[in-house]
Length: 397
Ligand SMILES: NC(=O)c1ccc[n+]([C@@H]2O[C@H](COP(=O)([O-])OP(=O)(O)OC[C@H]3O[C@@H](n4cnc5c(N)ncnc54)[C@H](OP(=O)(O)O)[C@@H]3O)[C@@H](O)[C@H]2O)c1
Image 1 (cartoon, protein in one colour):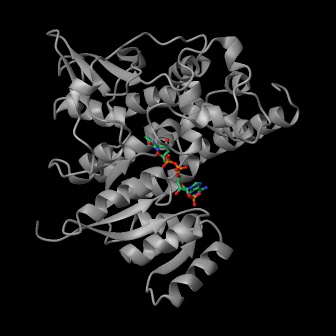
Image 2: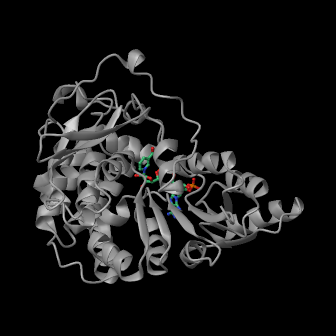
Image 3: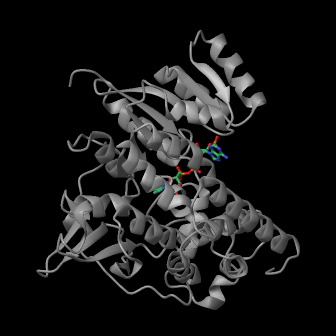
């Protein structure tokens, strides 16, 4: 390789961000970090800046940025520190950034990831909310500006690996019959509806197979995460929702699969460690070491599969409803869910209240055409206001 590839990591202090830095650390000859962003974790960001010497670091507010700046100057660091949304966009579009890892959680990642698409970068997409909220706009920007979009979510990364390279000419033309999107079923796969009444945040965040941030852990426990992934898959692979079948697979070894018209099923398997899809997206079309232990099929012994229960896991059905409604409906569902999960983590909403709140907000707001970012942002804000009002009124307590 002639020169090292520059990488910006949006959401560097998070679970995906830290796994990305771990892969970078293993390949100093291939990659150099050009920008790192965090929201509040000043010390984590400062430590990573001292190790990787990026050109730019971004924090959420002026006070955090000033503190990080002081700590970095004390150590003789030359990293510039900025704050706020414009600075996130600057990090995502630095001329030195050949690739951008989009790993902010939630709607906050939309503007910088869209900016990366508009400047034609290679985007490693973990921040699924970008596609959930503004799939049509984002995919249009990717196509118009020749950006390269590589999915990092393990399931979509697996599907990408199992699809033919020219899948964009159309899934049916490529002989694809179904996309089999696997789901671990989360920590409450076998819990009854009665058991689910009293679930605590600590129980919901204890995922059986994956170690993840708190928001996505709760989404995994409600299966909203799988619902968001169905929406994400529709946009990434230009697939109608009925082509995507969710398959509960408790071992999380088969990360997803593609069924073809000749009866073949191609799957990607691996240990549940996000460094595998991260390394795949970073090096594509090559493969590099990710620091992940080799898969031992003898130790695994068996693989189980079952159909999802749309009644106990109502959020999954809501995602299919939202993508069918189209327009801003997925953005509305995503916004309601962010409020619901935050309220649940703050013990202001019971676990089953998450789906009830999401359903109420989705049902109360019209799905408008997704013609501009402004409309998406407005729908997101209105859904949040309604969801917050319902939480404050203890409507689903
Ligand atoms: N973790 C996984 O295994 C996994 C797998 C597949 C997909 N994903 C997706 O990847 C994304 C990141 O997940 P994660 O688990 O890494 O989340 P996480 O551990 O919670 O990290 C989130 C990152 O986003 C930053 N952030 C939070 N709010 C922000 C805001 N308002 N503005 C700017 N930055 C903000 C955080 O900064 P601070 O740390 O300073 O708060 C942190 O760097 C999510 O969209 C998730 O669905 C995650």
